[in-house]
Image (cartoon, rainbow, N blue to C red; front, side):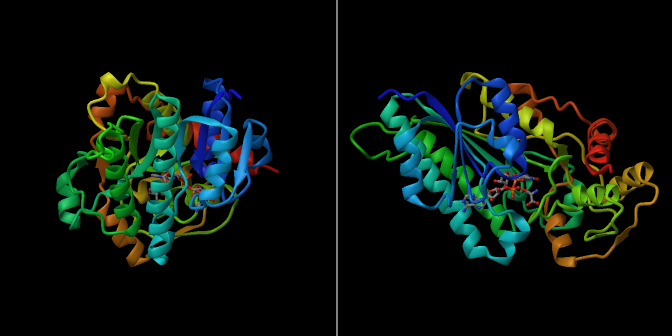
Length: 340
Ligand code: NAD
Ligand code: SER
């Protein structure tokens, strides 16, 4: 029985999944299949061919997907994020690393069976960096992909290792076998900054203070920011993240000079985010209640990233800078969301 080639999105019920399903459904005619612990929101479920509910570590679930679909693109989003992972490091390793290994094996077998490489998109993070001191962070400025690859969190270590796993599968898989088995996966990876969405609220991450601040203000709820006003990391509006994924995966492979790319858009301090939120919502009750340990994690992440390779190779060009992200996307959409 011939089956149409399909897209598989894991972790599809999460924040990026929401945006990516919309973006892929609009841009591609391929059927979309999803896998997540949680069911999709009904408006998203309508855009996918079939959703599977369960754990990425369950081999029988992946077998059920293969039995029904020929998968030639995998967007592997399922993960435990940085704060959650730090409370359950062994579980994080199982989900973030063993889960990714399962999906890479799945993609490898799909590539072997249909004889063309399976696209495998992996979302890494600025958490893959570990800058040793605040002075070094300030001095470093925009960090290049190959600097400071010494993460201090389980999540960051998981991401960095999975970047290498993907590179291994794509280029060196079972290199001692008689037959050449590498090249069945076209592994592509973006290291995302903190993402801010108007339609979902994050949980379990360490960059969550910026999105939490604006969503709380719009709902007239008080917010205690867990980092210092001068804490600075790069952020991006969610539509630009989905657009970047699409641009990246549709770029001819010959133009790519790396497997793993930084992307950036704007890099405000928490205090700068607060000022913009207060201007839009003058009644906002924001105060700082420092969590020194979460702040410690943010201090190891870069203040900004050098995304020159992404701009040069595949045309990364975010639509939203800081002012536009808040003024044209976040504030209007979040106001509407919570109105009435
Ligand atoms: P999210 O927490 O909103 O979504 C993750 C999804 O994965 C959830 O729907 C969850 O139910 C699912 N999931 C978790 N464990 C699972 C398991 N064992 N089996 C099946 N599903 C499971 O996260 P997000 O913000 O959408 O992030 C998606 C990906 O992008 C993650 O890999 C994350 O590390 C990465 N990323 C996110 C950001 C960000 O700021 N949001 C930044 C950099 C990288
Ligand atoms: N935004 C994510 C987090 O804070 C980083 O990948 O966990």
